[in-house]
Image (tube, rainbow, N blue to C red; front, top):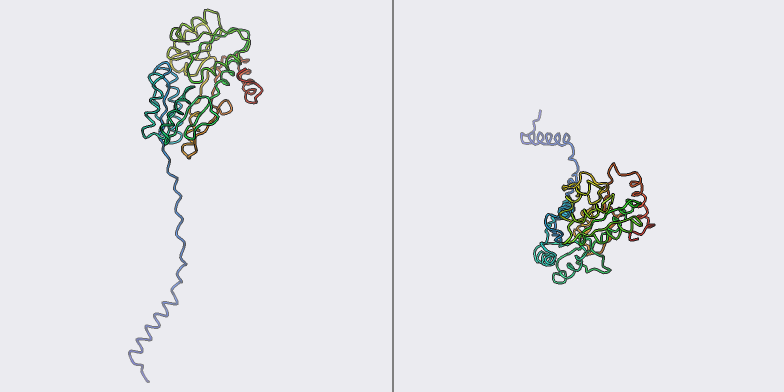
Length: 328
């Protein structure tokens, strides 16, 4: 029998092994596309805002604390730093606005009827900054770097006055010059209508305590009270003889434990739209906010007469529909 050369035998063996390996090997799977990257949230945008408060009746004015609380809340909701400072005197408000405009603040605001003139004047000297005026009269054409937010507190005043309207005399003790106070008073008197009113203004020569004593001596059964530092103590004195109506902070800061009717301006809702514009790069604008924008909160206590509750709901509906003029 003829034998194959050894080199041929080895070659055949190698070929058989390779063939067997090829026959048993599964085809490689097709290449899969790489996994899509996990979407990452957009980085939060942080801006720096300073709000300069008016002097009010001093650093212990309860309204200053209420403003701080609302303005801080607007910043927290938007990952925005909001610094709140208060002027020692009204003449220093413009100086403080100019001071912060010269620093690294993105937005500088102030509050009250005179705030629009202040920020408009400072804005001319600092064109690279944004400014806002809160609770100020709305202009027809504000500069692009200035936002103005008008707060229609006459609607709130009218709502309160109409809820209290009737035959019984109402005492009114209000301190002028506070943000929104003049418009609130106009709406309040329009809402009270023909109701007998004893109105005593608070001034440097006539303290809130003096004014409350005067309206109580006139025999009023309800006192509407909104003033500065002495208001909580004066409200306690008034509550001994009459029902007290006023801002909600009266009950929180040493005033009566419960008000017949309390109100609050939501300052977070006033500043919030301006911060939103800043975050998305919108230019300055003019806004007018009121009842329909939910910038006011009114609370009625459990002991309030049913007619007060019903009247409150009725008047609010008429104001929202435009059937009732808040200024009378």
